[in-house]
Amino acid sequence: MTTFLQQLVNGLSLGSIYALIALGYTMVYGVLRLINFAHGDVYMVGAYVGYYASRKLRGDQPSLLSAIFVMLIAMLACAILGILIERLAYRPVRRESRLTLLITAIGVSLLIENAGQLIFGPDPKFFPSLAPRADFVLEGVRVTSEQITVIAVSFLLMILLRFFILKTRTGKAMRAVSFSLDASRLMGISTDKIIGITFALGSALAAAAGVLIGMQIPKIDPLMGIPYGLKAFVAAVLGGIGSVPGAVLGGLLIGISEVMVVGYLSSTYRDAIAFGILILVLLLRPQGLLGRVQKEKV
Amino acid sequence: MRGFLLALAVGGVLLLTNAAFTGAFGAGLAMPPYLLQIVCLAGINIILAVSLNLINGFTGQFSIGHAGFMAIGAYAASYFTVTFGDRLRAAVGFLPEFGRESLVLLVGLSLGALLAAIAGFVVGVPSLRLRGDYLAIVTLGFGEIIRVIIQSLDAVGGARGYAGIPKLANFFWIYGFAALTVLIVYRIVHSSFGRTLVAIREDEIAAEAMGVHTTRAKVISFVVSSAMAGVGGGLFAHYLMYIHPASFTFLKSFEIIIMIVIGGLGSISGSILGAVLFITLTEGLRQFAQYRMVLFSLLLIIIMIVRPQGILGHREFVTFLTRRRRPLGESPGTPESA
Image (cartoon, rainbow over all chains, first blue to last red; front, side):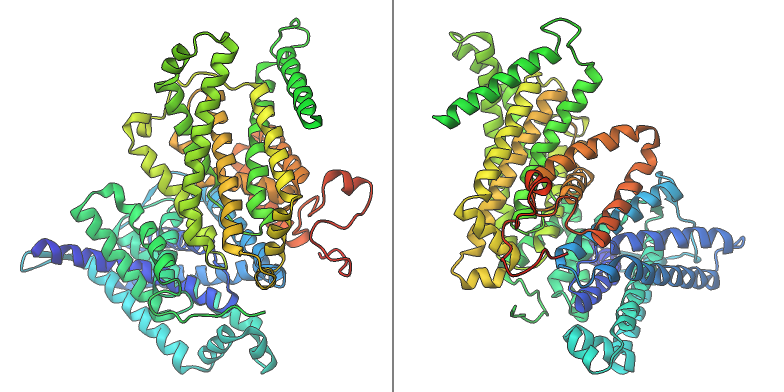
């Protein structure tokens, strides 16, 4: 039982990372019907911005204040990156076929990965510890302060996002755009601006995930976005792509099942489990757990 | 009869060229080994690009796990030739040496193609039932999973790579199979089944309304494409004599995609052009190796923005140069869509 609870805690903290990344996938898919392949790489850039910012900002002692600053800087930088990607690469081809958009997304992803290897260097870097750390032991279950931070920050951000989408004017516009791009343009919504904001929000969340993973697993490298991006995408599909609560649920489920599989079976299957889940979802419930069936019409 | 003679002629020319390149007619005609290797790898790239174009260009579905099927073909074929090759050679001892070696290679390649086709079926059925971009993400995941599985298989060397593969493939076999791939894809595309595929590419809902069993057509196209990737992988293994799981990462898949996107999605000669251009650029830019992929990815984005149909678009090279004939699948009323 103790082992199970321990794995559950580990799974929750990994799952919140996936959930944060999955939110970006699901939001962009909602407004553009595009799998934003570059999203995992935005997350990687977020981790690197966090890495450089924390080396500059961190004093002698890790402090909570500098940790918050580092995270905000990374989120801001990635929000700008997200807007740039949308503006320079996706907007010119938005009216083309979906295949064109998809290939462009793959191109952007490759570009960030390879430029990342040039700029950051291909070798992994070690993330400095940001906040003061402590371990808590409860009934034999060890919970690190990083895990608590990861879970707390992720949930805080998700609640903020939910508030933003449901209660603000811009959030309402985002929901309208994801319902129908053309209709909302006719209703006077500036769809270009909304799409930009969607990219900015999704990328900022990915950056937060990048800094959080840097605190938990301190090794970062320019290709780290691929496995995380892939699993987060599976999480978005599992929860129902286009659905914000679905992305969170899917992320947590993927994280927990991954940790359980590694804990009880073997770490060889670490990457296989998400793929297996994806195949099962596509076979049994293609719209995902919380997604709605969308009829394709002419 | 005409086809048989043509095949015989092509085979003969390839055999003679192979002999000339390897120096059988005197050193003057021989090609430098480095150049010959590039030419042969270009041939393998042609097989991969043309086969990927069947699903990506003609059927309009997006697979980004071609390297995964290539890996299956490479490992299955190599496992056969390494483990059972000698037994097969002994069983057909009455054949001349060339015949024995060819048989071993052909059986290995068929096995690789078969396994790759089965994998294509398993991956294709769940993801091709759905519309949209699911195939892309499933094939991407599949390509990575296959690599992880191979890494944990000790019988084929695992993470150390698989060495000691006999050098059975050469210029003759590679270009023979490249010609065969082009022929198969050409015949498929110009059949009524091919028009079904183009119909799915142009408008899936309309195709379905016309009575096309879209899932079935898509799965067949995907399985054929995967099998040909398996052959390409088998040739790759038997040419380089050493394969490693890292040779079949998603980067390899993306390279093949770049080839067909540059050349033109939905153009066989475009894929050939793209494959040759790609390997020429890769070798030409060898001294800038670290900037190479940055350049290619930028090129991919720019092509998508400026000329999303690639160099040749849907057209073939001959029609591209001579007549501005309507490409396959476009109705007479619509002008060439940009």
